Length: 321
Length: 110
Image 1 (cartoon, each protein chain N blue to C red):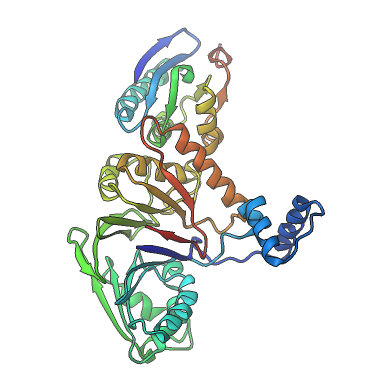
Image 2 (image 1 turned 135 degrees about the vertical axis):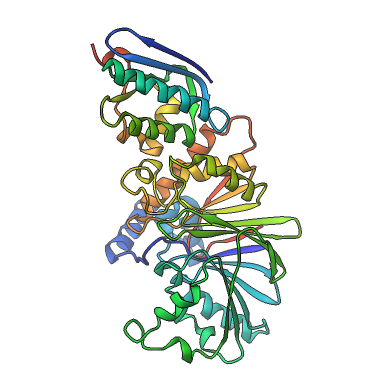
């Protein structure tokens, strides 16, 4: 399996201002200290190898959308945040090369940042495309239709040409889709909850768990998540806040912290953790700092366990599983 | 995790030792909750002496949050003498913004 991140930001799409890009260029030039490069490839290699990620790149600003490439017969996508627009453009290109126009979409919950990309998803406007939207929430269809009502968007849902189906799944019944065995887990998120997904194929497992709050009052419930994450090759976790913020200022907003994600993965014996759903107020430097802190925390509390590999997801990241 | 609780008249001092992790957090929670009640009863600040603690994971940190909530503002819970690992964990989790952290137990009360 291959996991491809199209949108990794939480809550709201963001983009760096011109000043932020200028600061990156200036920092890279300072690091280069007058060094000359034969061509752009050499300069690119220098930037990639000699500067930090937050200097030579960006974590991106599109909201949640992640693709799992598992089956050549269908696309598999988690969430429909603003990253879905770019996924749609890419998918059409692959369809032109012969990929079937079948899309299985797995929705964590129908909050705006997780569905806002759908009206801009070009395959939805294509006759012959089939889109199956899997959800734990029975009102996912209502949410998608509502955001395309005339007061919000100029193109009504009813005029989309793709065949769009909605399937509601109970959390205790695994099912097969796109060559994957899929399980759901109910997660605490604000008033209506969200769902995490576990995808399994050929002995490999990927877990997608975003918009899940793990509060101080319900730590007993975390055993279910340790079971759900058990032995996973990759766990993608909402790590929007520090734990201190998550239990105080941001309590009940429905999000998790980097340190809880590490602890759940440790307890579950997961192999890799991808930090996801980045705070929209966070600059690239802020997110990179949180990433470094997470690496350090993992070392400090690892005990006798094998190391957990920690990645920080960014728009465009591809991970082989 | 080992646990000792002492009252020197100026402060109630809780001394967890070892690790507070997914194995020991419930024990830590029960003992700390009882210590909070004792401190409130005695009208003394509660100091958690971290000097014997190797590390604390997020479950232990969240037990601290629950203890603070249990105290209902009647007493202040202080964290004292964290080792280098615990200092780092408190900084990473931003718990050093939620609890007063001091270098020595005797800096509290008295």
